[in-house]
Image (cartoon, rainbow, N blue to C red):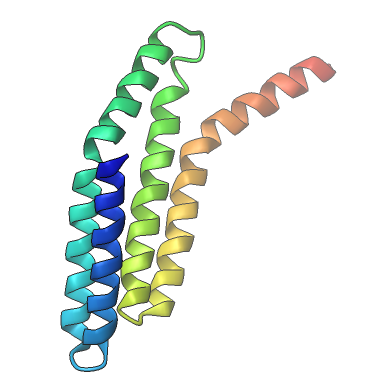
Length: 128
């Protein structure tokens, strides 16, 4: 918990620094934001690693083992998309951020399509 509070404090400091710098040097402020995001993500990497390990262990002992890698990829895409969108928005690039959001959603949908097809086939098979 105290590690989270440290990250939270660092994030607030970085946000204040970027906000102050944005008026004087916008590109430097964007760099501060990117650096802060990288540092914060590296600070929670252990936590993410534990979660991934738990999900892998869980998936090996269940019938849903084939779905877990796809779920993990989708979560990864969602997180990376959110980080990229935040960076674009803090740099003032709203249109680029919107395009990244759409691309992330399309990628997650593309990951899910084989399973959606499988569900539709099962549903159609039940109706026949």
